[in-house]
Image (cartoon, rainbow, N blue to C red; front, side, top):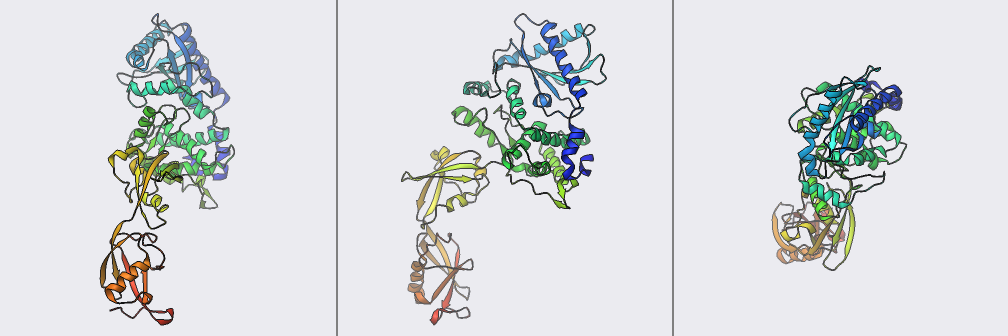
Amino acid sequence: MKLYSISSKSLDGYIGLNLHPSKEFQENVCDAVNRICSFLKENCKLDKDTRVIKAIKAGSTGKGTTLDMSSDVDLVIFFSCFSSFQDQVEKREHVIKEIEKNLNRCIQTIAFKVDISPPRKKGTRSLQLHIQAKKKKELVEVDLLPAYDALGQITFSYVPPTKIYTELIEANGQPGEFNTSFTELQRNFVKRCPAKLKDLLRLVKHWYKEIKVSYYESFKLPPKFALELLTIYAWEEGTGKEQFNTAEGFCTVMKLITQYQHLCLYWTKYYNLDNSQVGLHVKGKLKESRPVIIDPADPTANVAKANMGAWDLLAQKASDCLTQPCCMKDEQPIEPWNVQPTRGIKVTVKQPTGATEDISCNPFDPIRQIKERFEKDGGICELYWEETLQEKTALQNDKRLADYGIFFDTTFLLYITSQTLNIFVKDLKSRSTNYTVSSSETVLGLKKMIEARTGVVVNQQRLTYQDKELEDGKTLAYYKIRSNDTVSLLLRLRGGHWNGMDIIE
């Protein structure tokens, strides 16, 4: 693709010259939308209980991220006949047929040309139109999507009452089935982005579009909205500033795509996990097979849901992209922002004494790493997840938070115990002797056990573990010595030196 021949320092110019929509194209799209809206409000004769409440431009046109000559116009029409999400399911297809009937009836008299695409399948959720003004050459593709007005009139800073989301979850529709009702929130989420970030969105969408054209017949690529949200996440975590290096941002998105198997993203701008019903639902979505990117406006929708083969292809193309001039500087790969495939979280650790400590973790941190923070005084830690405490199952050392589906702030209960260890002490003849000790036992205590069994006095012993000499006053737990580990025993000679060739009999 032409993008691959562009140098990284020229990306901003490339976006301005090639990806920004022309004024004429924008006017043509706006004209088409206005015409269809006027028709629906003034000339479309629907049932007596059905009227248009409002029409909202969605897609890239509504978000302000339109590519030149790529209309992507979704027109969401809110009708009065839908009084609930269930109403939308039951009456949507009838409303679509009525709109189509009205268009066919008036097609000769309206001041623009309309081609109606046949429904893609039974139960379709939209009516696809190709609109052409009489004096324009270009066709504008518009998808009409009837929807239930769940939000009412909103402002740019509007946050829905929790009740709306509990009703959405209780409607038990297919994932994302009712996201048209939340179109304005989806639009505002992207529309709030600074101009330069919108340009980065255009660049990523252009890259995606070029790949889609090449593989359209053989692969259904992951949804474009997933890449839009991934780009916004990369910016939020990587810089969050209005001005940034476009090439660095683009490389960050490409790198995250190659890490798609670890992606687990969600936002709490419009809903949060405090409500038990909403929280339980979102946490359930976060446990789905990755990648997971939950719609910021609709917690029922994982917009990254796609065939793994399609994600594999996209990851391969992103990896290729990272080797192209657009991602290189002075023949060296551009360093992306330090952005992980999921956000860091806060873990509150409670102890039986009542003491609590908040620690920052990444969901891909191993459980062992968290426990080591508390194993300072010789004790062995056991962690229990507060949400599954009734199961009385401790979190396993070799597991990660992600393996338990923990991608959100949570609480652990910490119990410190003295654990019995079976360790081996090996001499230079590779003879191993088993000792049963407490994890809180000191190195000096172990030496006394060795003296009692072998007769080698304490001050002649030198113990090492993983090539590190053990200090008498430290515990075995301090050195992270576990059951079945081996400690090496060497002989220390007078004067403090040791003879690695001498063997302790």
